[in-house]
Every structure is written in structure tokens, then in C-alpha cells.
Length: 284
Ligand code: GLN
Image (cartoon, rainbow, N blue to C red; front, side, top):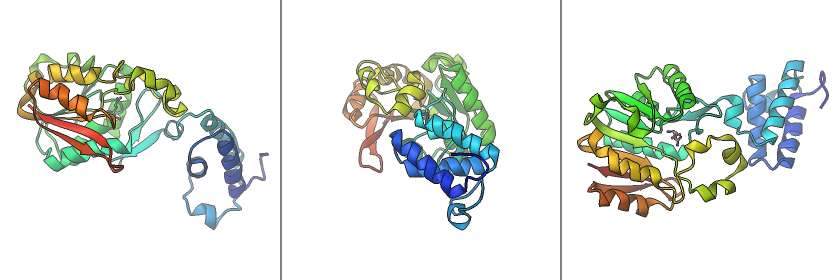
């Protein structure tokens, strides 16, 4: 692709060929989204003004971003954001990219009612669960924690971007929290790392090579964080408080068993839009 005479539609076709050759899934959608990001255009511009000539800067950005996408860097990291629950979240390589499946968890929390309730989000990452719950659910005190300093920097930007009244603590699960918050939460949410260590090598390159492994690796059986949450959450929850956790599609039985053994009640599984087990919720 030369510069100076490349039209919008030529740039799209060129991107499509390169992304397809590199094995990028949904190559056409990726090509269109990257062009729209680079040119500040809308989907209909492809059809209304296909002959628009790209500027030199736009051509240079195309070369750079298409080649990065061909290296399987996630689209969201290239454009710097992802929407979640209708809100926009900044993402970079230090946070798990918010997933549509995770919206199931937040939807269930909102359905159960979060107004005025105190919420703790463990492994908050980008902060997408905490911030969307706080903003959409009009919660009381909303607190997130994460072991990653870099992730919390992103989460803080996201709370400012979405005007959320939340605070963050850095540390390993509950160790991050001031003791004064013990027994104060109505709701605990968590999308902990839950991939079995040996399964990580088989993930898509976008996830395996570009998302933080600390946000994915749940240990040999993928369940270590659920065991730790089951052991420790009681002390932080009010009587009758609920925990909502995202799980892998094949972990509902194991996770339910871990919490049942510790005396948690009203254990329920929620399915995602594909009909797969996605969330386990339990009551103290
Ligand atoms: N809470 C964030 C999310 O759901 C990050 C989860 C994680 O890092 N495991 O996207």
C-alpha cells in the first residue's frame, strides 16, 4: 500500500487481506473497526464515501496498527478501550479485557438489587465489574482490590472516566483491605483467574501472549482462588450477604462444592447467553 493515493475502500481491502493471511478471527470486522478508529469514521462512511483518500498520517497508522493486529495484539489494546454494560473502559496489556460473558454477573447483581449496598470486587483488574455495578446499581460504599499495581492504575482511570465513586486497595485478595471494613459488605463480586495452568498454552494468541497471565492462571485445577475466597470471605460479609463469582463453563459443580463445604447457603448457578454455566452465587 503506497501513500498519497490510497482510498478508504482500498485501505479496508488491504487490511482484510493482511488480517486474513495472519489468521486473525473476524478479519473483516477487525479491518473495518481499525479503519474507523484510525480515520475517525463511521461504518456507513465505507459505503457513502469509499473513494475518500487517506492522509499520510492515516496510512502510517494503518500500516502500524494492522501489522500489530497481525501479531495478534488484541484489537481492544490497539484502540485502547472496550465497552462493558454500556460503559466505556480503558484497557491496556495490564488488565484482562472486559468480556461480554462477565456482564451476566453484573446483570444478576443488579437484578438482585444493589442500591445502597456495600460492594467489594476482588481481582478488580480494569474495574469493569465494580464500576458498572456502582454506577448502574447506585451502590453504597464500593471497593475494589487487585494484586497488580499496574491494573489498579487502569481501574482508577476507569473510575474517573465513568464518574464512579469507588476506591481501590492494592494487595493479595482480602489482604489488601483495611481491617475496619471487616463484616461491612453486602455483596462480594469476583472474576478471579480460573484457567487451569496447563490449559494456558492452548489459548488464543491474543489472550495467551497479550493479556496478563496473572489474571488468567487459576493454578493446577483452576480453583485456587475460589478456595481462598470460600475460606476468607465470611469475615468480610454481613450476615446474609452474597458472593457472585464468574466461573469456567465446567467449574460450577466444583465451585458450588467448595462453598457448600464451608457452610454457604442458597448456592445457585447462572448460565450465559450460550447456555453455559458462567456465574456461581452463594449466601453467607
Ligand atoms: N474484574 C475484571 C474483569 O472481570 C478482571 C478479572 C481478572 O483480572 N481476572 O474483567
